[in-house]
Amino acid sequence: MSDTIIHISDAHLGKASFSKTTEDGGNLRESLIYENRIAAIEQIVKEKPIAVVDSGDWFDTVKPRTKAYSVTLDCIDLLEAADIPIVMISGNHDMPKALHVTSPFEIIARKRMIHAAYSFRYEKVEIQNVVFHLIPNMMTAPDYVKEHKKIEVCANANNILVTHGLTSNLPDKRLSEVAECNLDDTIVNDPRFIYKALGHIHNQQHAGSNAYYAGSAEYLSYGEIDDIKGGLRLDVTTGTVEHMDLPHTPMFNLGAVDASGIDRHTLTDTILERAGKLPENSMAQIILDFKDSRTTSIDSDNLSDLRELLLDFKIKITSNDVTRSTNTQTDFKSVDYIKAFDTFMQQQAMPEAQKETVCSIGSDVLKTVISQHTDVYE
Image (tube, rainbow, N blue to C red; front, side):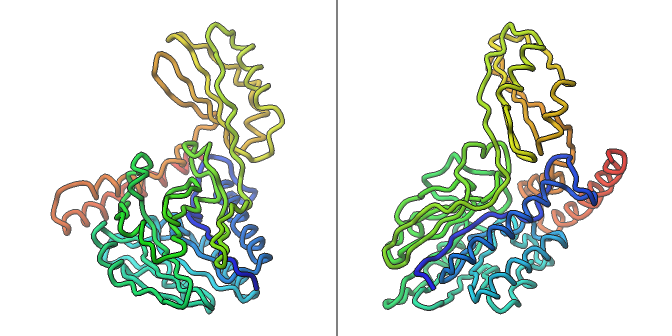
């Protein structure tokens, strides 16, 4: 057994994107995320850490798909077989936001080697010489402060804080999601902890005072194209923190092309040259910069092989300070309309009972429409 803790976060199991499907008709992006998560746990098991820490958003939604549950149980089985415990908290994606909704962690927390905090309160877990102080995603920022005040650190142990939220030094990273909360500086800068394992931000980074975002292992949007992905390895004896590569679907930034005055065939050839030999089922983005409002069409037929090879290929067009994007694969299913509607409703000023009724009815209507359009789409 080593003296290390492996910190991972924001797996978002169940997330589906783009239009490509597997042989059995499932969403390919979702399937790749599952495969990579199991491969990542297999890699972590080989390191024999004291424990694995997940700082939230293991699931993409509070009501995960059945496959997301089965993959999660497979991951936990791998850890149990190696006698490696996993410490988890709920993030804003996988936390209940209504009284009648049950946390998905109530099911997986029954496994022997899992310690999960998801009940909107501070909890403590001791594993060997490490004490984990867990504050899951809360409904409001003051709730974090309230739970943080309950913490009593153990003098003869290595104390680690695990929580999920946005630090004050990263205001530009706000995702405008439901239950996204700021972490008070008194929490982030608390000197009593040798390490603070943070979740929510998908770019791996140091957030100050022994506080680190492990980031997501996967590229979950093109806004993350330049992010650092993976996990973090903490040596509890020395306090050393190291990046850890984990299996993921790659995303490539092909840069910007000055597209002014280029004919469609030359522009298409330039795109193909930039793409080179990208790995199968990877994602890529290229920016076409037109200095004026006149744009050139693209020879889509000559991009068909590239489209077939990649999981997704995004062409971002800029001109006269106006930016728009076009995907070589049209995919209305990549938009989570239910989540967008829920976010909108949470921002409305109305009685909670009325809001809950509107959310329920509106969600049912959206699901019906989405189902009908899915049938047509497929």
